View 1: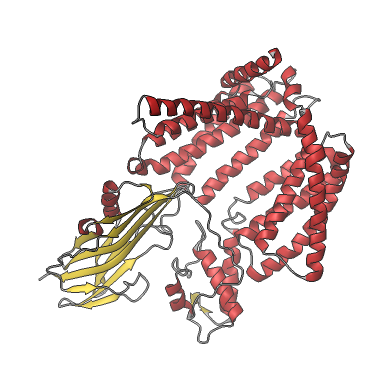
View 2: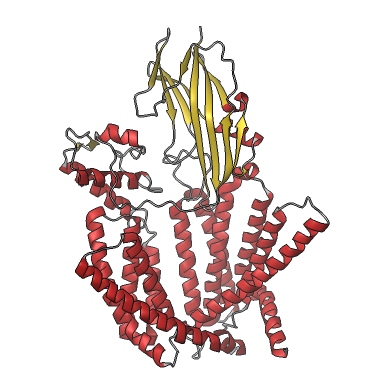
Length: 619
């Protein structure tokens, strides 16, 4: 019982000492928590103007917390001087400052490509910060296993897992207990207590869990011996049994199944969907390497057999996967799924070869390969958002050239309908490029080519989907509003024209109205990525009205706050917008309005279904 109490007190003392041992790391985590609580306090309409800044701060502070772990551990384990410690902390502060500046000034989504109502951090900027965090974490694990002869990467790797799960358990208990007390207060004493209280509790519990995680690690100072290190990096007996006598047999059985499955597939030719194949191969590779590290010091016969057999078996299975990858790229070119699987395959092959050659000493070399690939995946030209786009642009150009549909840098509609496979390939490439995030597309590729009507107009045939496509939509928790026009009688007086047919978008032939002043062209511009639509009216090809619906959306969201998705009937006043210029007065009437917020993707979608446009020419 005394040892259990000592263990509990050791964890709490370690979390308190973490403020002194890793000050910038803990400070960054505290700043992250403060920003989170500010966002909780501000409701969405108030938060919208600061959303981009908050995102930048969150990413920067998260990077600072992880990077500082590595820099301070490097200073302690390699130098162990006050000067080195101060430099490591200053470096952590500098990284946070640089990250905030870089994200804020250069990390926003391209507003020319996305007519977005809110500015958000671009996907590639977020990926680069994530890669820096990932590399920093791996560097920390390597450095943590470099402080004395009794440690190595495998022990440090397990120690990090152990610290994480202990911190997670404590964090969950703290959050559950505090939430229970808050629930009792709400039920018994204060029924009107805000639900935000639970969000604050979760944020504080997360911060405390991080301090426990950092505080669990032993003293990394060079020349110092901490008795806690042996306890921290030692695998308990039940974990040894779990790894060596449960997980290892499962992985051996899985290896046999995969080898038999690969042979059956080659002989029968019954290939599974590529996404399924990539998922199986990636899971097997990463779980296999992870388990190999975990049983590095296992003495059982099963562990020794697994350490010898896994690398060779993995190479055999990966050779089969390479054939599937080449067939896939030959059919569809390199897209995001193929790109990531290709990088996974390179890491798995390199790791298997290194394990065969170096055995227990291979881990640092494997980490170096993983870090190089992680950085490679977010670099310009070679990154996940550049290389697949370049490959698909070249693929599309070659397809169009082969059909005589690409002349002098411009797309030319097909005179005769191409073969089915060509139409499928063109559709596949166009839709991928249209949905590419922050892509540097050529001038001849219009942003709306993915729209089925624009596609048919520019290429001369309808979209035809391949039998197997790559488009999957992730699940998300959506919040929003959905309004329907209250179908009662309304009086529309003083307008000369009512336009009810589908209003054309920009780049298409406009809906034309012939008045005394000339010909009015009406465009209802719907952004392909769900952003705010806009109205454009021309008179004899000169723009007289160009107005987006931002002010109208502000009015709607003020009256109908975003929250749990609700469906309401709205009166005429809320479902209409009046605009005017020197030449005309315009009334827009909407049939349906749908606004949804996806917190996971930090994205807002707007759908305004235009029922009619009423137009009056001024005298």
